[in-house]
Image 1 (cartoon, rainbow over the protein chains, first blue to last red):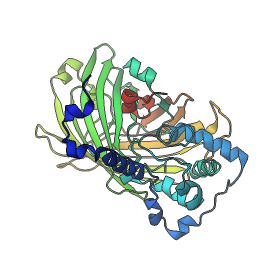
Image 2: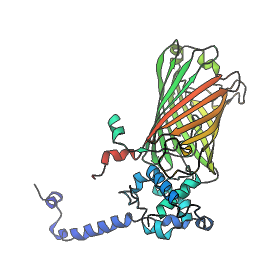
Image 3: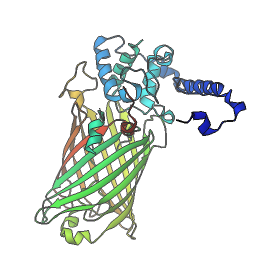
Image 4: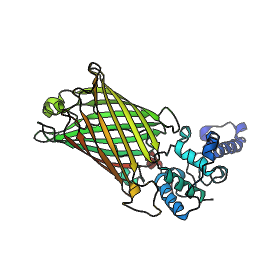
Amino acid sequence: MRPYFSIVRIPAQFQKLIPVAWLILFALAAFASLPDGSWLEKVPPAERQKTNPYRGQSDAIAAGRRIYLDHCRKCHGDDAEGTRKRPPLRSDVVQRISTEGDLHWLLVNGYMKKGMPSWSKLPDPQLWQLITYLKSLK
Amino acid sequence: MLLLLALALPAVAQERPYFVTYSHEMEEPGNLEIENFSVAGNPTNANFFVGSNLEFEYGVKTWWTSEFYLDGQSTQHDSTIFTGYRWENRLRPLLGEHVINPVLYIEYENTSADKALREIVGHDGLPDFAGSNALARADVEREMELKLILGSNFKGWNLSENFITEKNLGGDPWEFGYAWAASRPLALAAKAHDCTFCLEKFQAGVEMYGGLGDRYSFGLHNTSHYAGPTLNWTAPNGTTLSFSPQFGLNHYSVPRLYRFGVSYEIEQFLGIFHREAK
C-alpha cells in the first residue's frame, strides 16, 4: 500500500507542518461543535424571568423524558449527549447559564438559522415538562 | 423503500388534524413524512368516488418544507386512475414565533380528473363530478397555486387561515379560495407513563373551506363550501390517523365528504444512509 503522503505529494519542507495543521483543524472543529449560546442574547427579559410551574416535580421529569424521546432524541442523542451535528443538552449553556425561561423562549421560537426548529406546536405545559427533564440532567 | 422504513426511527409527528388547511408549522429539518389522505363522497346525480393522495413531505430547512404528491381516484361504475402529481414548497419568511406567523406556499400541479379535493377554488363544485373519467382525463390541468398561510398558537390552540390563488397555465383566469381551521390537543400536559389512548394523543378541531370564484366573477355565486369536525390520534409508534366528516354547505357542494388520513414520520431520513457505528 502506498503511503498517504506520497499520494498527495506534499513537499518535504511542509511535511513538518502537518501535525500543526491537524492540531489547528482539530481545534477549529472542537470550537465549531461547542454549544452555541448566542441565542441567549435574543431572549427578552420578561421571558427570561418566566418560572416553570413543574420545577422539580418527578412526574414532570418522567413526562419530559417521554417528550424528549419523541421529539429531541434523534438530534441531541439518546441521553442528551449531543450528536455529530447537534449540541449536547448537558452543556453549561443549558444547565447553568440558561434560566428555565430562556429555554422556554428557545423552544417556542427556535433558532432557525442554526437548525433548531420552533416547537410552538407543543402545548406550553409539555414545553415546561421537557424543560424540567432537561434541567434534571445536571 | 420498505427496507428504508425498517431502518428508520419513527417520530411522533404531533400533526394538526387538518385535511385542506395548512398550518404555519413546518416539517422538522431532515425528517420525511409519508402521508396518505383519502376522501370519499357521493355527489348528487353522480357516482360515488374515492380520491387519494400519497405525499412525501421533507424538511429541507427549519424555514423550508418541500412536498411531492401522487394523486389517484376511483369512481364507482367507472374506473380507477392515476390523476397526476404535484410539487409544493412552503417558505417561512419570519424566523421565530409571532402572534401571526406567515408562510408562503407555491405549488405546481399536473393533474386531470382529480377528485382528491385538497383545495377548493374558483367554481369547483358538483358539475365537476358529472362527467366520466375518460372525458375528464382529456383535460390535463397544469396549474400554479399560491397560498398565504397564516397561523397562530395560543394556549394549546392552533388557528390557521389560508388564502388561495390558482392559475391554470393554459390561460384560464386566476381562481380564488380559502380555508381555515382550529384545533387543540385534548390534554395539554403529557402523562408521566407511556400510554396509547391518553388524551394528549388526540387532537380535535373544526375545518372549513371553499371557493371564492375567479378574476371575472369573484364572490360566492356558484361556489362550493364545506365544514366539519376533525380528529386525529397518534399511535405510540408515531403513526397518526385522522378522520373528518365534512358537510357541503350549499347546493353546489357534495352533500357529505368523509376524509381519512394516515401519516408516518421518519426522523432524520438522510441519516439512514450514514448511520454511525455503535
